[in-house]
Image (cartoon, rainbow, N blue to C red):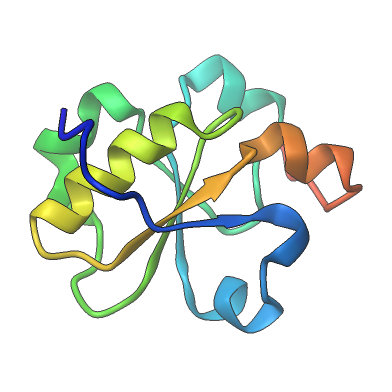
Length: 107
């Protein structure tokens, strides 16, 4: 799925609070991963469902794509950018997020 394109990314340690506040945070992990903890306010759409649910992703807002370490979210970022969204990959994903002590929500 678009593996040769450059992927816009940001690492957790350099994630600007302003970007996080303005972005639509999209978590593309599987349901069991989501249930173990996610970024507060994130929208959960597993990567395998993203193509059919892309209409749930806003056109007028930056999208910060998140997965466990950055692989699946990188694919989501490429896909979303190819269909006209402005998406950025969270490099390091939830693993880096939690390692840095960032807050995690559970349902």
